[in-house]
Length: 102
Length: 251
Image (cartoon, rainbow over all chains, first blue to last red; front, side, top):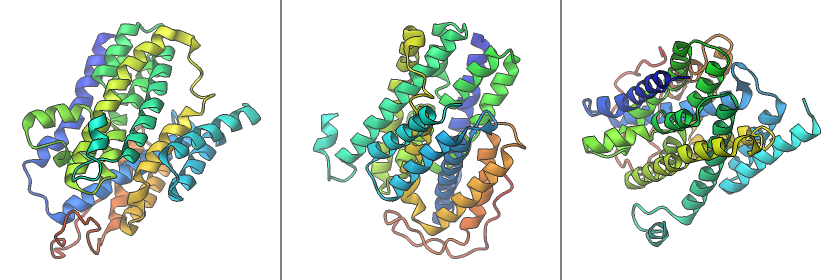
């Protein structure tokens, strides 16, 4: 890995990040569009959660991770405290890996 | 940090529940950062370089990807293009929460750099605009403050850092983000959009390069239309009259 890779990745990522806030200023968005954009952001986060729960480098990530995220999801739905959600998800996955290695 | 608890309950103040979430997120992120540093060093990547990447790129997924691809012998341009595809979701993030960063140009230029998933999720979990802004900046700066030092620390400790897979940390981060978006999912149109979008992303994963399936999930936003009324109490005003359904989903 070289400095060039790091700089190009950093510049590109920053461009992707800064484009939205700068472009947004030039257009007056209606309530309705603002609401749709919020829904779009939640949709991206939701899809990121689901794909990172299921896949690792394009392949299946294994049942241990899926089960851990699912346990965390159920607890979050039941309004469990945030720390409990995170710890339960990690503990479930870690536990399943001990019980079902490979 | 104590000034935060003092302002609890006041307009724009974020309570101790927020601080608790923030701290657990910071701990989880620092463990992940340590594992990135340890992995990079074990693959022969200079520690200063991976630390620099953590500070300048500041998007964990693409950093793991770059380390993995380069050490597997991929061409540098592959790591750059792959990482940028993975980070493509930040563009629509910026459109959605651009006003959260602040009004000034400097606030937008600096605020854009700390636009990580966690900061976006913390911001969207708040309704009041002032609370949104504070949540975004506190979450973004906290994760930024933790990330690069953790990568450095992980590299210094080398292989003595526990295997993140054995600790189940790969499940902790998606679960943490899920907990942050969960309140928004109680809104029916949002839930429809997320369910359809996630399904699209899963189906697209074997077909598209890494990162793009998440962007393809924007098709799901069409499932939120029509949006009968704004759920946001902070918005106050009713939506504009139905002027035809906007066309979405050609992402």
